[in-house]
Length: 320
Image (cartoon, rainbow, N blue to C red; front, side, top):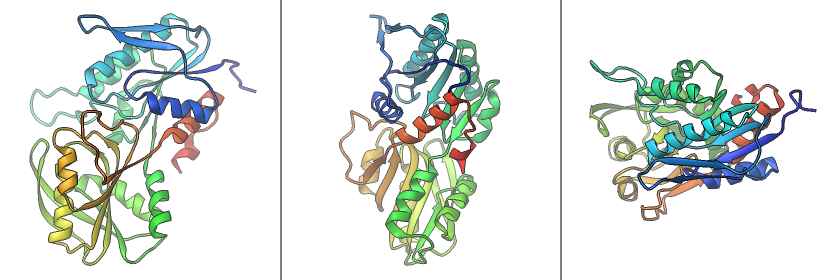
């Protein structure tokens, strides 16, 4: 018996419809009947073709490329549901765009992540469900509940099945100092030692590897990061691990595969043997296929989280 007595409805924008369908399949429900289109001048238009009055509505929309279009589509969908008297609206944002702009790095910089948080709240979202925010403190930018799921559980299961637990020939590697805490937890799941690639970033989307902290010689290494954008940092780290550290082979995994610019070409030409991504962002339709990239689905994890939210039971078990 659901305490609030409302029915659950899942709707999707245009950013990642396949993931939304996977979530609905896991929930044993149908995807809500709605359409998001564009007027001739590019304005977003949303039509909802079924009643949502009093319903517990979940809108699945990653704010990935084209970021601004997908963000605006999400805001308009939230507004449409609010004006249609939805009982509660949860913005399910598998990939939260603008998350890298979470502080003032220099004078007169915007804090765009806070701006997006304000927009979502003002549009009418009652809570947010996302995965692996670039910076965990972004949860504090919201005045509504935010559940930030962790993709590392899917990666740990994958590599446990592949290499086993506590394999002495395998090491976890943090591709930069900022990811150390994330990789340390990941290494504990696999019962592996870890190393760190120390790098100096000269400018945006470019980095220079300086040093490797830890002995990776002759080891199979697994790098973990939250996202792969242009893949420059990840490929440079893989090169350093192989050429400087003497690693036997390099695997990499990341929650969000943004894959901008020449990312696919870099990955194809890199020392990375296999890159595991989650399907929070679909593979770019304008990019050639890459045999090194493999996707794991987050549909079941998001479906379980949505079920917990709907039934108003604790979601904390999904973080353990």
